[in-house]
Length: 247
Ligand SMILES: Nc1ncnc2c1ncn2[C@@H]1O[C@H](COP(=O)(O)OP(=O)(O)OP(=O)(O)O)[C@@H](O)[C@H]1O
Ligand SMILES: [Mg+2]
Image (cartoon, rainbow, N blue to C red; front, side, top):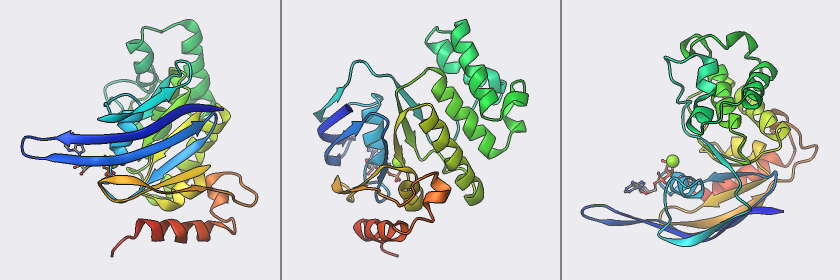
């Protein structure tokens, strides 16, 4: 079932001196439970697309159809935790803003913290946690309001390589277990191929969709395992060529 339909999205930014056509044409449909990654050269408009899809910005033209009031959650670059709030209190921010601090919702937050290895850190402050743990807190905070679709903009970019692998594996398992749909922007082609059901490759600005790959890996399982699939390198080569990086 398709839960989000995007047709001919276009975005022009107006500054005092110029008009910048950031996104020329972007159309795609998201299926229930699907994980989609968006990759493309720097400045091509990936964040612009994500912020329009999740309603933080408006398109200049084009339409977005959403299935019966689905709820969105976003996790932007970095973890944006508040250092003066405990881990538990950080996880409650979304619920506070929505005025939904019900017993049921608080139980859900406690359940997520317990399930995902943060049981003993509820009263700790962010600066006592590792980068990976902080990222998990950030995800739990996003999940607390029970969104149906998660929007992730470079969610792991603040992490070192080893942690990034472990955390992306973690986050992927959580998203799948909680049966969410997700759209993730990333610079990391391996991350995109190992996590996503489909990878959308954008052209340079003004951007359009250059290619969409359905990722079919033999023995598809978790992102770390998926990197070992025999088709992995082939997808990597194709997408690398599409993006046409000049070194
Ligand atoms: N608020 C704004 N006002 C004017 N121009 C903007 C604004 N936001 C983005 N742009 C321009 O639109 C283009 C797309 O920006 P965007 O941040 O969406 O790209 P991106 O693909 O996410 O880049 P990166 O990979 O570096 O994160 C860029 O040329 C940028 O300078
Ligand atoms: Mg960006």
